[in-house]
Length: 387
Image (cartoon, rainbow, N blue to C red; front, side, top):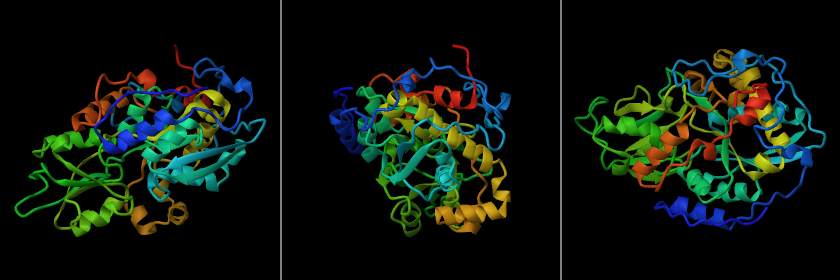
């Protein structure tokens, strides 16, 4: 593989920095696995998988908020250990958020090892991780198809969204929260010129979810002042007045729910995941066997430990709280996430529209063929769609 450059400009400083680093990154993997694993995704033989039947796949075009996530039986898909062990590094912005729980559990329960994978989780923000992913210094990124990712792909880099993470429970209030000013109520809030605290700042996938909420409250994506904060600082900044509003994840929002002076304005669309696993050239091209194996372990973990009612198991909640270093009572007080490895049709198109409204994306939106690859998780569960 060789260096590739790009000349795509963007107005967001963080995105620009990431894109510049991407442009200078050599897309070379530190190791060269068995050439037999290089067959292109979508051209590989897909065989039925024990424990994964008709319910292990749903039509990507199904955008119903009541869609049941795909599921195999617990313990499925069964491990298929690689002939030679692989060491993989997955970057993630945090290790404590609930949406990272499947990776933490897979590592702790040895699900990756069952596939012959030695996995390391490394905390890195997306802009810092992207050039490393493009170069092959890390193998995967647990994040979202944010504006920085889209702009990197526009620059010519082979980075794709290969598996989703979750969608919210209907009872969840994960999303946009605001501190009410005098005379305001949850149904009457003026959002223009408010300061919003987020982990990503401009160019985050929450732009898509926020757009509808803001339209109802006298503000648009371009009217908000964004303040990027660490994952542990978002709630604190909202509570102490450092920001006027914030995007709060499960179960953090429970700490302000029902308290006077706070209002929930809207959250992520139900039934539509907005993040998950991103692969670079190492697992998309150089070592597809390892790429499929990593998703197989992730999917098996979801099927084995994250049933729709996983928070009804007090023992598991206690275990999870210790793993995530969170308060068990707070964790249990929020509804469970709907863990979901499948990617819906059109999500990246809708995200790019929101990025354009924020002023952090330019030009023609990327087609889904450039941003998404479902073939690896389909192979992991034994689904061979008509092509």
